[in-house]
Structure formats: C-alpha cells, structure tokens
Length: 116
Image (cartoon, rainbow, N blue to C red; front, top):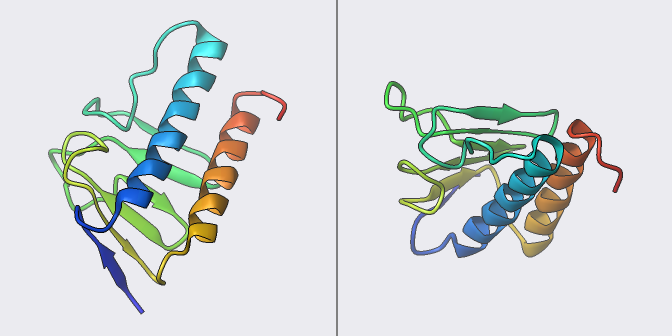
C-alpha cells in the first residue's frame, strides 16, 4: 500500500516536521550558542541519526527525499513549509505522527547529549 499526501492533506505532517525542526534548532543553539544552518531550509545541509534523516532541498537531485523516517518520505521545495508532499507505505494515524515526533526528538537529544 502506498499513500500519497500533498499540500491539501498533509497539515499534520507539516506540523510534525515543524516540531522536529524547532527541537533541532533548540538543541543546536544550546550546544553551540549559534543558529544552525537548518536542513529544513535551502542551505545544502543534512542532519541524520539512527531514527531519521533530513536533507535540504537539492538542486542536483530533487527526487531525493528531504525527510525520511521509517516508510515515510517527505519532499519540499526550498524549505519544509513550501510545496510539501509525502509518500508513506501505510495510512498515517495521529498515533504514528506522535510516535515519529517522540522518536525523532529523543534521538536528537541523545545525539546532542541532552538528558530527557
């Protein structure tokens, strides 16, 4: 099963990505006392850990997913709040989204050495 989401039906996914983005920004600031060149923006940067990967929009390969978590693949144009679409191997539930946020944020906290 393959479920496609687009601008009209992926507001929950967008909200989840914004939570993950904000947590990455916060953790980076707390560790480095400067703002991150966020891979959620048009920066060319990538961030990954054992739970997920987020890549800035690629001009060379715009078929590469910008965000990957389990069987969810998200794509955007230039930044995560523009032209968002997603593909998933199953229909996402609110519980799936809540779990994704928790797993991704916990993995980042571990990477940045913050105890949760």
